[in-house]
Amino acid sequence: MSKRFYTTDSNQHGLPHDPFKAIVAPRPIGWIGTKGRAGIRNLAPYSFFNAISDSPKMVMFSSSGHKDSVRNIEETGVFTANLVSRNLIDQMNLSSALVAYDVDEFSLTGLTPVDGELVDAPYVGEAYAALECRMTDVYRPKTVDGGLADSWVVFGQVMGIHLSDEILKDGNIDMSLARPVARMGYMDYCEGSDAFQLARPKVPAA
Ligand SMILES: Cc1cc2nc3c(=O)[nH]c(=O)nc-3n(C[C@H](O)[C@H](O)[C@H](O)COP(=O)(O)O)c2cc1C
Image 1 (tube, protein in one colour):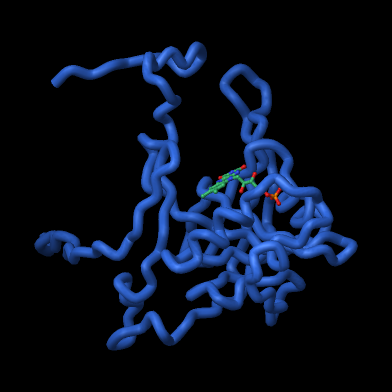
Image 2: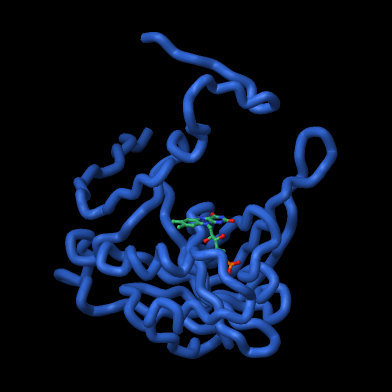
Protein backbone atom coordinates (compact mmCIF):
# COMPACT_ATOMS: atom_id res chain seq x y z
CA MET A 1 0.00 0.00 0.00
CA SER A 2 1.46 3.36 -0.99
CA LYS A 3 1.12 5.97 1.75
CA ARG A 4 2.18 9.55 2.13
CA PHE A 5 3.52 11.18 5.28
CA TYR A 6 3.76 14.89 5.92
CA THR A 7 4.44 17.05 8.94
CA THR A 8 1.83 19.55 10.02
CA ASP A 9 4.27 22.43 10.64
CA SER A 10 4.69 22.93 6.90
CA ASN A 11 1.50 20.97 6.06
CA GLN A 12 2.89 20.04 2.64
CA HIS A 13 0.38 17.26 1.94
CA GLY A 14 0.77 17.62 -1.82
CA LEU A 15 -2.97 17.50 -2.39
CA PRO A 16 -5.19 20.22 -3.83
CA HIS A 17 -6.97 20.68 -0.47
CA ASP A 18 -5.98 20.08 3.15
CA PRO A 19 -7.31 16.56 3.91
CA PHE A 20 -7.29 16.86 7.74
CA LYS A 21 -11.02 17.27 8.22
CA ALA A 22 -11.71 14.48 5.73
CA ILE A 23 -9.37 12.21 7.68
CA VAL A 24 -11.14 12.85 10.98
CA ALA A 25 -14.56 12.10 9.61
CA PRO A 26 -17.47 11.88 9.91
CA ARG A 27 -17.99 14.43 12.67
CA PRO A 28 -21.33 15.04 14.34
CA ILE A 29 -22.67 18.56 14.05
CA GLY A 30 -23.56 20.48 17.19
CA TRP A 31 -25.97 23.21 16.19
CA ILE A 32 -25.28 25.68 18.96
CA GLY A 33 -28.10 27.94 20.16
CA THR A 34 -27.23 30.93 22.35
CA LYS A 35 -28.35 34.38 23.41
CA GLY A 36 -26.09 37.31 24.14
CA ARG A 37 -26.34 39.49 27.22
CA ALA A 38 -28.55 41.87 25.22
CA GLY A 39 -30.88 39.00 24.34
CA ILE A 40 -30.02 38.61 20.64
CA ARG A 41 -30.42 34.97 19.59
CA ASN A 42 -27.70 33.10 17.72
CA LEU A 43 -27.54 29.73 16.00
CA ALA A 44 -24.49 28.19 14.32
CA PRO A 45 -23.23 24.71 13.36
CA TYR A 46 -19.99 23.32 14.82
CA SER A 47 -18.57 20.00 13.66
CA PHE A 48 -15.65 20.14 16.06
CA PHE A 49 -18.30 18.82 18.40
CA ASN A 50 -18.92 15.70 20.38
CA ALA A 51 -20.25 14.10 23.54
CA ILE A 52 -17.33 13.58 25.91
CA SER A 53 -18.88 12.02 29.01
CA ASP A 54 -22.10 10.31 30.00
CA SER A 55 -21.70 10.55 33.77
CA PRO A 56 -22.34 13.40 33.98
CA LYS A 57 -23.49 13.99 30.43
CA MET A 58 -21.15 16.49 28.80
CA VAL A 59 -20.48 17.86 25.33
CA MET A 60 -17.85 20.09 23.80
CA PHE A 61 -17.38 22.16 20.69
CA SER A 62 -14.48 24.16 19.36
CA SER A 63 -14.59 27.52 17.65
CA SER A 64 -11.80 28.35 15.20
CA GLY A 65 -11.36 31.95 16.28
CA HIS A 66 -13.48 33.71 18.88
CA LYS A 67 -16.93 33.49 17.27
CA ASP A 68 -20.32 34.85 18.37
CA SER A 69 -21.39 31.54 19.96
CA VAL A 70 -18.37 31.64 22.27
CA ARG A 71 -18.92 35.30 23.10
CA ASN A 72 -22.55 34.60 24.06
CA ILE A 73 -21.66 31.58 26.17
CA GLU A 74 -19.00 33.59 27.99
CA GLU A 75 -21.67 36.24 28.65
CA THR A 76 -24.49 33.92 29.78
CA GLY A 77 -22.85 30.61 30.76
CA VAL A 78 -25.40 28.52 28.84
CA PHE A 79 -26.13 27.10 25.40
CA THR A 80 -28.14 24.47 23.59
CA ALA A 81 -26.68 21.81 21.29
CA ASN A 82 -29.20 20.76 18.66
CA LEU A 83 -28.79 17.72 16.42
CA VAL A 84 -29.12 18.11 12.67
CA SER A 85 -31.27 15.76 10.62
CA ARG A 86 -31.35 15.40 6.84
CA ASN A 87 -34.49 17.53 6.44
CA LEU A 88 -32.83 20.50 8.20
CA ILE A 89 -29.57 20.54 6.24
CA ASP A 90 -30.37 23.71 4.26
CA GLN A 91 -31.31 25.67 7.38
CA MET A 92 -28.17 24.35 9.10
CA ASN A 93 -26.04 25.52 6.20
CA LEU A 94 -27.71 28.94 6.05
CA SER A 95 -27.13 29.40 9.78
CA SER A 96 -23.37 29.14 9.15
CA ALA A 97 -23.38 32.32 7.03
CA LEU A 98 -20.98 34.99 8.17
CA VAL A 99 -23.51 37.58 9.31
CA ALA A 100 -23.32 40.49 11.75
CA TYR A 101 -23.58 39.81 15.48
CA ASP A 102 -27.08 41.28 15.69
CA VAL A 103 -28.53 38.93 13.03
CA ASP A 104 -30.74 36.26 14.61
CA GLU A 105 -30.12 33.04 12.62
CA PHE A 106 -33.45 31.62 13.84
CA SER A 107 -35.20 34.44 11.93
CA LEU A 108 -32.78 34.13 9.03
CA THR A 109 -33.52 30.44 8.58
CA GLY A 110 -37.19 30.44 9.56
CA LEU A 111 -36.55 27.94 12.35
CA THR A 112 -38.56 28.05 15.56
CA PRO A 113 -36.63 29.33 18.58
CA VAL A 114 -37.93 27.75 21.77
CA ASP A 115 -36.73 28.98 25.17
CA GLY A 116 -34.93 26.33 27.18
CA GLU A 117 -36.71 24.84 30.20
CA LEU A 118 -33.62 25.10 32.39
CA VAL A 119 -31.27 27.48 30.59
CA ASP A 120 -31.81 30.90 29.08
CA ALA A 121 -30.80 29.84 25.59
CA PRO A 122 -32.96 28.99 22.57
CA TYR A 123 -33.17 25.56 21.01
CA VAL A 124 -34.38 24.55 17.54
CA GLY A 125 -38.03 23.50 17.77
CA GLU A 126 -37.71 21.41 14.58
CA ALA A 127 -34.64 19.43 15.76
CA TYR A 128 -35.27 15.81 16.79
CA ALA A 129 -33.07 16.35 19.82
CA ALA A 130 -31.75 19.33 21.71
CA LEU A 131 -29.46 19.38 24.73
CA GLU A 132 -29.73 22.18 27.28
CA CYS A 133 -26.23 22.86 28.59
CA ARG A 134 -24.46 24.84 31.26
CA MET A 135 -20.94 25.85 30.33
CA THR A 136 -18.30 24.32 32.59
CA ASP A 137 -15.12 25.55 30.85
CA VAL A 138 -13.99 27.68 27.95
CA TYR A 139 -10.34 27.72 27.10
CA ARG A 140 -7.76 27.96 24.37
CA PRO A 141 -5.79 24.70 24.04
CA LYS A 142 -2.04 24.90 24.59
CA THR A 143 0.26 24.11 21.65
CA VAL A 144 3.53 22.14 21.85
CA ASP A 145 5.61 25.32 21.43
CA GLY A 146 4.06 26.86 24.54
CA GLY A 147 1.62 29.05 22.65
CA LEU A 148 -2.15 28.91 22.44
CA ALA A 149 -4.24 27.60 19.56
CA ASP A 150 -6.47 30.09 17.77
CA SER A 151 -9.38 27.99 19.00
CA TRP A 152 -11.79 28.32 21.87
CA VAL A 153 -13.04 25.01 23.24
CA VAL A 154 -16.34 25.15 25.10
CA PHE A 155 -17.36 22.38 27.48
CA GLY A 156 -20.88 22.06 28.77
CA GLN A 157 -22.81 19.81 31.10
CA VAL A 158 -26.10 18.60 29.67
CA MET A 159 -28.84 19.60 32.12
CA GLY A 160 -31.92 18.67 30.11
CA ILE A 161 -32.73 16.84 26.89
CA HIS A 162 -35.55 17.37 24.40
CA LEU A 163 -36.23 14.27 22.31
CA SER A 164 -38.87 13.85 19.65
CA ASP A 165 -41.07 10.75 20.05
CA GLU A 166 -41.27 10.62 16.24
CA ILE A 167 -37.80 9.11 15.95
CA LEU A 168 -38.47 6.33 18.49
CA LYS A 169 -39.23 2.77 17.51
CA ASP A 170 -39.74 0.11 20.19
CA GLY A 171 -38.28 2.54 22.72
CA ASN A 172 -34.99 3.10 20.86
CA ILE A 173 -33.89 5.94 18.63
CA ASP A 174 -34.22 4.63 15.10
CA MET A 175 -31.51 6.18 12.92
CA SER A 176 -33.57 5.66 9.78
CA LEU A 177 -36.16 7.99 11.33
CA ALA A 178 -33.70 10.45 12.92
CA ARG A 179 -31.47 10.65 9.83
CA PRO A 180 -28.63 12.46 11.64
CA VAL A 181 -26.23 14.34 9.39
CA ALA A 182 -22.48 14.43 9.94
CA ARG A 183 -19.75 16.56 8.41
CA MET A 184 -16.87 15.12 6.50
CA GLY A 185 -14.12 17.03 4.70
CA TYR A 186 -14.41 19.46 1.82
CA MET A 187 -18.12 19.95 1.09
CA ASP A 188 -19.05 16.37 1.93
CA TYR A 189 -21.71 15.33 4.38
CA CYS A 190 -23.11 11.93 5.23
CA GLU A 191 -26.28 10.67 6.73
CA GLY A 192 -25.99 8.29 9.66
CA SER A 193 -29.04 6.23 8.81
CA ASP A 194 -26.99 3.29 7.55
CA ALA A 195 -26.76 1.71 11.00
CA PHE A 196 -25.65 -1.85 11.63
CA GLN A 197 -25.43 -3.80 14.89
CA LEU A 198 -22.33 -5.14 16.57
CA ALA A 199 -22.27 -6.60 20.08
CA ARG A 200 -19.16 -6.05 22.22
CA PRO A 201 -17.10 -9.16 22.87
CA LYS A 202 -17.77 -10.98 26.11
CA VAL A 203 -14.60 -11.79 28.02
CA PRO A 204 -15.02 -15.12 29.81
CA ALA A 205 -14.79 -14.76 33.60
CA ALA A 206 -11.39 -15.99 34.86
C1 LIG B 1 -21.33 21.84 8.94
C2 LIG B 1 -20.51 22.99 9.48
C3 LIG B 1 -19.64 22.77 10.53
C4 LIG B 1 -18.89 23.82 11.06
N1 LIG B 1 -18.04 23.56 12.09
C5 LIG B 1 -17.31 24.56 12.63
C6 LIG B 1 -16.47 24.30 13.74
O1 LIG B 1 -16.37 23.18 14.26
N2 LIG B 1 -15.76 25.35 14.25
C7 LIG B 1 -15.85 26.61 13.74
O2 LIG B 1 -15.21 27.52 14.23
N3 LIG B 1 -16.68 26.88 12.69
C8 LIG B 1 -17.42 25.89 12.15
N4 LIG B 1 -18.26 26.15 11.10
C9 LIG B 1 -18.41 27.54 10.64
C10 LIG B 1 -19.36 28.31 11.58
O3 LIG B 1 -20.65 27.70 11.59
C11 LIG B 1 -19.49 29.76 11.08
O4 LIG B 1 -18.23 30.41 11.20
C12 LIG B 1 -20.55 30.55 11.81
O5 LIG B 1 -20.72 31.80 11.17
C13 LIG B 1 -20.18 30.79 13.26
O6 LIG B 1 -21.26 31.47 13.84
P1 LIG B 1 -21.19 32.31 15.17
O7 LIG B 1 -20.13 33.40 14.97
O8 LIG B 1 -22.58 32.90 15.24
O9 LIG B 1 -20.87 31.41 16.31
C14 LIG B 1 -19.00 25.13 10.52
C15 LIG B 1 -19.87 25.34 9.44
C16 LIG B 1 -20.61 24.28 8.91
C17 LIG B 1 -21.53 24.54 7.75
